Amino acid sequence: MKSFALLTTVSLISLSTLATVRPVMALESRQPAETRIAQGNNQDAIGHYNRGVGYIQQEKYDLALAEFTKAININPRLAEAYYNRGVIYDEQGKPDLALSDYNQAININPREAQAYANRGVLYYSRQEREKAIRDFRQAAELSRQQGNAALYEKVMEALRQLGAV
Image (cartoon, rainbow, N blue to C red; front, side):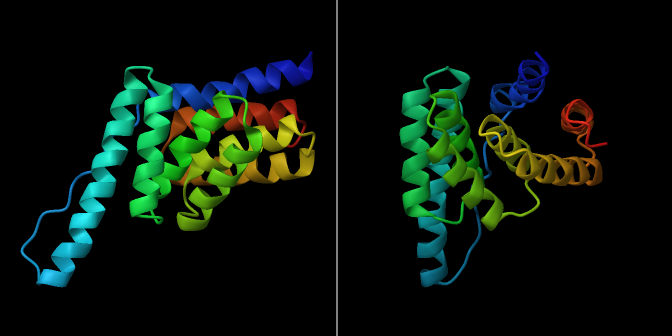
């Protein structure tokens, strides 16, 4: 029963966060031609990302998944797209794909507390307790530093339930 409670506590992190995802702002400036081309491509990636966010808010997850994938294909450094695609994969029962995307999001942005928390949930569901605890601790530290009290409390509750605090 304890393991179900832990997964319930931390699983709430995933979809509840998706509902509050904010679109990425488009880039605007007067730059040399090659910079404008690079920014134009990035704006295309951001456009796909923002459409993906819109589809999540409409609960059209397959369309969101396609938009996040397009964003990644255009800009493979867009950590938010990997993170959100990972959450969708996770919710679709595709943990290997979710883990891969969480890893990419963390590699690109090692300060992404939410990605550590979700990866911790995956590790826990795979019975990789030590990896889960390590990721939950990292998520707790980052969320504390970033002032994300809601995430901090959820991750600390998971650590308490694991007896790791």
